Length: 113
Length: 112
Image (tube, rainbow over the protein chains, first blue to last red):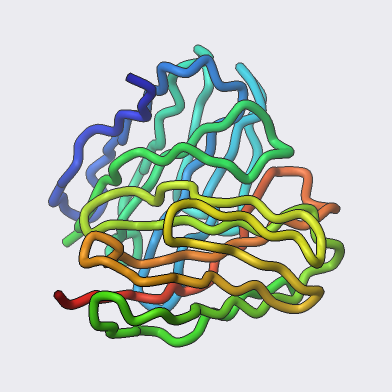
């Protein structure tokens, strides 16, 4: 089954404690991206990757890092989480940067106290 | 600035009561407009892509249309299982990162 898998699905943490949200896709997609979804602000792009070792910032990259060492994996790293990073995070993938047909994961709800 | 506005924010329908959701957009050169469905606790699920004014796409009870300034998602004779939040998004031609600009969504509730 084609899918994008994120872990953890739910996490409560404290300010400053580094965490990683993993994302893996099994569709051999070139393009992967992270979005955050907040009430009143909708979905906003954090980072994207057009291929292995190629990543770049989206609209709201502050406080986040990513890496793309393998085609299937695109982890999101919060080096020093802060309360304003409390949000619902989605990883998405597609065959290329020119398509808006994204396959989304189920989401990771993060709370930073 | 590229922007997407959806209306209404919430819509309650009786089963079988047809209606339309609106998506108004401003974008510096449209590459594509996309409709997604999002169920509670789930990620958005792709529905349609529209590329140019006049284009229409259909899937079961849903039909999406596009003009130069807005898109409509028409729901014909909806069923309770159509209840979800419907998201509209645009992608600009000059965007190099594949970014989608999403609207806030319309939360649709269909009562039996």
